[in-house]
Length: 280
Ligand code: KMH
Ligand code: ZN
Image (cartoon, rainbow, N blue to C red):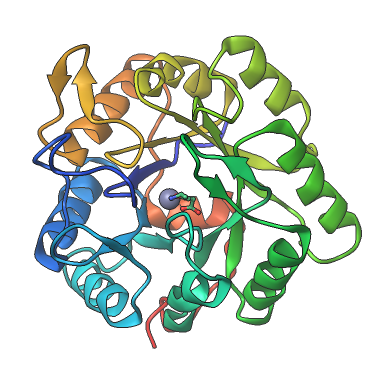
């Protein structure tokens, strides 16, 4: 079994300091959270950025400041910017971090109800537009799966040559409007993948740690962080993303699964080498 890749989703677009005061907003806060998560065992930082007041943004300059800052304190970590951004952003706004030449970025493969009246829109043409941009820029897409049909969409685009093998998936389980975080659903998603694929499991809220042992034992990878969950255990707010990463690292150790370094993660995910280490 491959070593375990831990992704830290350190701030997301929706979670606020009102929910947990430790959620990072500013560049300095985001860089610090990334550094501590890396030191705790994360090899990928899934990155959203914010205005200083917490408003989600895909602003190029803020992404650049965060990426430059993270590179200074953890030069080898894999930085995965979001191209999902926040509900309601335009396609080109969402694509702005690709100008920073990342090694990997998210590719959301379907439309989803996102609570209340929010709809996270990813039409077929949007997905193809994003996928073609990523391919042209040599950016590995991480296929975001909020429901099973999104796997089928990615497989269809793979057959058309728009998405290249091997595919890497992130199962985001437990978003209201998406697939539930049940054991049966996780088995269903895993069983739907092409055999050469890799996958990460992201459980939302209380499901974050519930799914961890199963993902670790099944050969999957894991994502944790404030984007998905604000608690370290029932009723106790997490003090940092690193605290959540460290908890996953401890569970993995107990189950006998080693943690992948960033370079090991690059090999496992077939991330194409970028001689400039993602920096332009
Ligand atoms: N903030 C969500 C609407 C991604 O990073 O690509 C979308 C999201 C997925 O977080
Ligand atoms: Zn995200």
